[in-house]
Image (cartoon, rainbow, N blue to C red; front, side):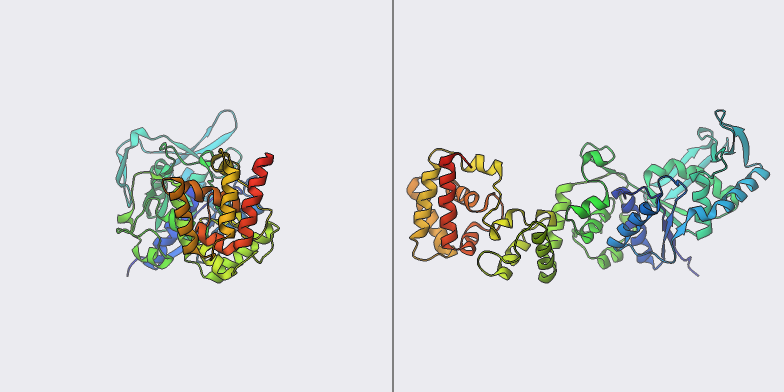
Length: 442
């Protein structure tokens, strides 16, 4: 009968959940679901000052938001303290450990590492790993205050939970050599190990909050979807073996295999994450997008209904251009209020040029007198005006128009924007921008 695979995610809650930690949870979850095994959640809460109820709740909320459902009840490490100490005493009795006064702080229990031979294991990601026993050092398993150290508690909890595969970051490789000897001393089977590559920044250094957002909650606040973050983090150290990048949970579960994991560091690319988020938003049901859009409008103090045109048509165009929900309403506020903000950089680069007030007035007159106010006709008219002026392309005209009527450089297609706003509003905004430029208030 095949072994029942059991993996675990064993964080030490501190109030924020780092993407490196949750990436390990994602890999554990994918493997468990791929092989029909169990994914366990163990809270290593022995640091009572940091592992507060609030910190644990934040962890649970992050797990639920990302859809990382676990099997069985949450396992709390503090519940095993007596067992940890009993095994420490057993190791003392059998000569695998000894007591020693460390730094004048009292007696600690020290685990005795071998001094001869080789400690080795086959890593499911990194391949064969070995270390000469003489290059290892004895280590503390119980502090002088009687509290079990991570090494002992971690190994014993894995034994108690029947963990068969330990999937974690490769910053734990050195710990693994110690833990293997603990498993053997206790008389328990050694699990299989898979050490995941570190997540690094552009300089190849471990990714941290100094490089940008590094915690799950921050990405949620910035408007990234849970499915996006899950998908992107799954690809940091693993690939399905083809060109797929945007994948469903089911597709990732089906394709996941350690043979497709990479041992080299995985670079965190914020631009790629943002691109992927835009792909996920574009694929959302229109009703879900509309509900989130309305929520963001309300938070910004804007009316729910746009100034002109059909809202359903407008959102259909905006949805495909939204990269994160934090962008909303942002460049699209101009459709809901006349009090939209002007981006300083856009104004300086596109409107602060000689003759701009006169150009905006000329454009206003042209739009006012246009026979029809439709996308194709407006585009043809602006193209003709550009040729009359000797411009190379429509850029010298379309960029000032966009900034004058919307306040920025991004958004839906310019001519679609003008038609949606309508002739009267477009003309009025061009004339207002021209007047403000003359007055020096823009």
